Image 1: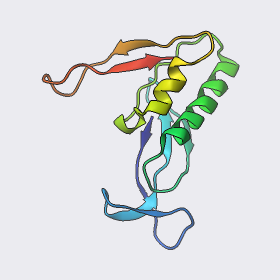
Image 2: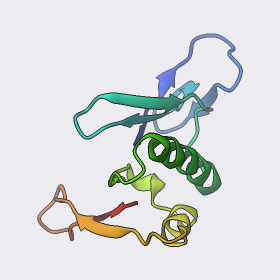
Image 3: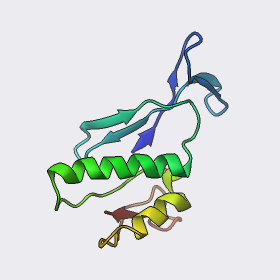
Image 4: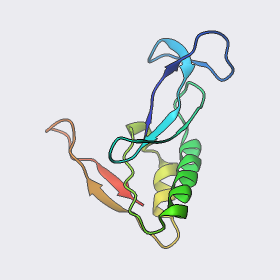
Length: 119
């Protein structure tokens, strides 16, 4: 999962100023599979998504995937701003499934390897 700034020109609704990019636009949530193929996107205002918004999106995404593939292992890998208490609480409090964590390589040899949940 990732968010990117999609610059908007004009006065579209939901466009907001993003100080990091110094521009106005939207910041959709974009999801790809492990092969890099597009899965889905959510058009949203040009600001960082809050924990409740991320949790609600993940809940719908996982439910949609499980509707077709109920026993598939889902590896969640996302940008750092998705690591918020609401998301971690949701992952840990899932019905009978406790997420397992897998380590993936970090970008720097001086930082510990981050762990990503498998839901």
